[in-house]
Length: 461
Image (cartoon, rainbow, N blue to C red):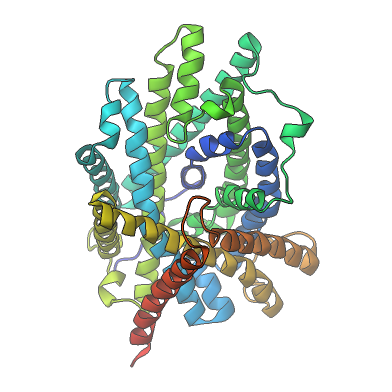
């Protein structure tokens, strides 16, 4: 029987983490808030990113192997909860992929300056771009992680390069022309008594999500107990720098009110380039941003496909999902199944208004599914420590003993819970708050209920 091959080294995992976690669109999202977003980034770093990184490092040290968070939740709370964690993570990403692809299509039109902008609203262009990117990354993964890892490696390098370019341009713009945004002690401080600010903080915190993706590939990482902690440390420093310094650079280059959600980075680079006599800066930035998005897509396709494979091995999902390709030793059935599901959702997103509204509703309903596995991560570690599971193998632990562990996991759990609560709040221009709440909760019940039906079927002798 074929087994998965250990092809990921330290460099690969560092770049995978950067590609998976850093969504450069978050720079534009945060910069639109204004200077107070810098303090919100710092708070999110303390209350979510550090707890997540520390928890993932210790959990992957205690229980390494293919499946990551699925294995951790299963060891701490039993098979059913392991299934819910893995199922929620996988299904939530099925909706995330189309939104990432459509964002990438929107950014790519800026590569040719003003000449391609008319394509932004063209469904044929958007569909062709998204399907080519989706199935290109999927086929690469079927041919083996040895090949597929280069997409996320290129994406990680592009992310680091464009972030560095944004930061340098911001510094140069400040030196030559002064800051476009006025920074004061007053506008730097967010109003943490406001529910809207707390919702924004939760959103920014979840921009740091993704460090748990690498350990899902634990069976394909060389020396995982040694490689995963080092990769998370190196990538963590890079990620925090990109988010905080990158947002500050955007605010220096452009006033917050002028920063567009999709084109914010090409827009800022073009603005600085025009003032310096380099008009192609914006197009170059758009090309790098597109590569970064494609690398992130490749990383998530690689990681999430391992979850239905591992759950299939445990017989809780249809047996074919547990198959490995006879030549490339990759979970090809899981990858193809994932690709087909995302294609269907993507077509729905690009279809007529009624189906399009259903897609928007699907996004609202599945937001919480993104957060559920994180609750399991923060809850599992104290339980596994208390039981002594994996203590003989743990090479890295959260400092401070039991108190340090509970404080770290408690802080991460509370932040994630805050994100869940705020995701149930209706949009300001939305309809009935009660209807929105029922839609969100009902959607989660529907998704989890569907998964549990698979689980119950798999439990039958």
